[in-house]
Amino acid sequence: MATSNSANGDVLMLEAAPEASRPWSTSSNAEIIDALPYIDDDYGNPSVKAEVDRLVEEEMRRSSKKPSDFLKELPPVPKFTFENYPMLAKEYERVRAGRPPVTLDFSRYSHLDLPAANKMNDETAWKQALQRAQRLLQHQVIRLENLELMSKYGPEVWIQHNRQLETMLTRTQKLAREQNEKIEAVNRERKYHQQNTAYELNALSAQWKELCQKNIEIQEACIKIENQIEELKRESSERGWNLEANIENGSLLHS
Image (tube, rainbow, N blue to C red; front, side, top):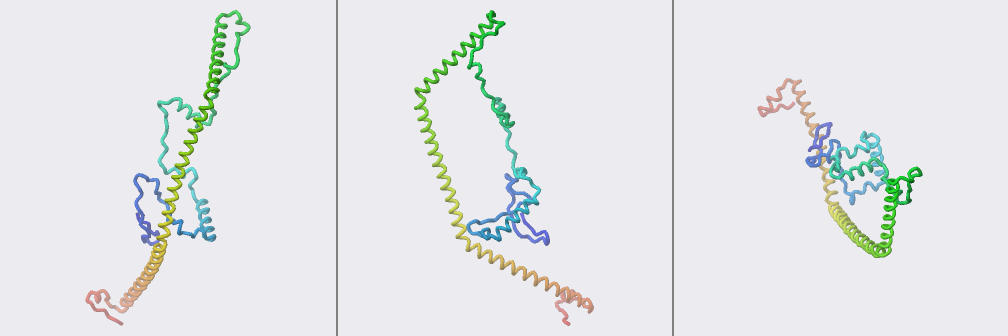
């Protein structure tokens, strides 16, 4: 892809074609950012920093893109349907809606309800009350068993659980250190290469500026010569000379 100056059509830069697999990575109005943070210290200049901040704020004010549009060019996020997991689907919708979780109802385990006063002689009502009493009793029995198990095995289980957490913490810290070491190695390598190539980059930059200045001088000389040729053509036309025929015959009349 060629970047050209809209005023005169001169090619200023050649860019690589956008990746077909990542069409969102290159937009029509994207700008190429070429930064070498370890050798480009212009931003440390307060005047340069103030100008850069001013330009950024001005662009943000003029921009028609909203913060919600920044990710619009990325591929859409896959939708989770939870077809085979209806409970997960229901819980997912609850979380999306911001509703609080449903609390468990333990009221039937907290007290025993006797039959109503008008059903004191109803055998069915007493059987239902008896079933509720049996459920309540069984619940209390299970609670006692859980307490006994907790008092007997709870401390050792918690000790093992804490050991597992400590092992996970040690492993995670080790991974974090390894990643930090890799990041530091990459940064050191970047700094090393940028600082080693700073002299070459500065020399190439100076050479580029010199060539640009020479091109400008050559272009100005060409324009001057073209103007002189046009002036000679105009003068020859006024004198009635056929300048093109003389050029073809290899002879040129001089005044």
